[in-house]
Length: 169
Image (tube, rainbow, N blue to C red):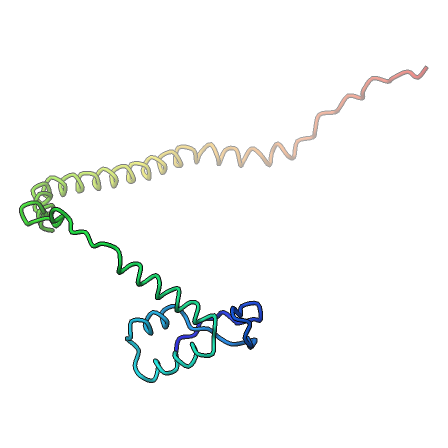
């Protein structure tokens, strides 16, 4: 028997009867199934026993039963025409249509892809070659600087001039 998580307290009692704290309530699905008579006999008996003891669930059942009766009393209107689309209006394309359209361009796309890949390889190789050439041209300058640096370190430092004296007043 589906039970709702609401707890019954003394303030929930409608008829002033003995409301027991901690009593669990039926959920609306169980009440709806009881009204529609779709419960099996054991569940129906359990719901009926709970309804006999619980004024809150009886009030929910009565409210739900009233709602169902009001909905059944509403007039049923038939639409003037069918809104279902026929096969002549569907206009659906097969999944292969767009691929067949694109397949006509595949040889050109392949050629463009190969050309782009070749240009990227050439640009990469050109960058590597130009960096190696620049490094080989700079090598003699680096070696000459490395040889001259220790000689400059061994030379005596030029004598520094003393700052001019400041007279105190």
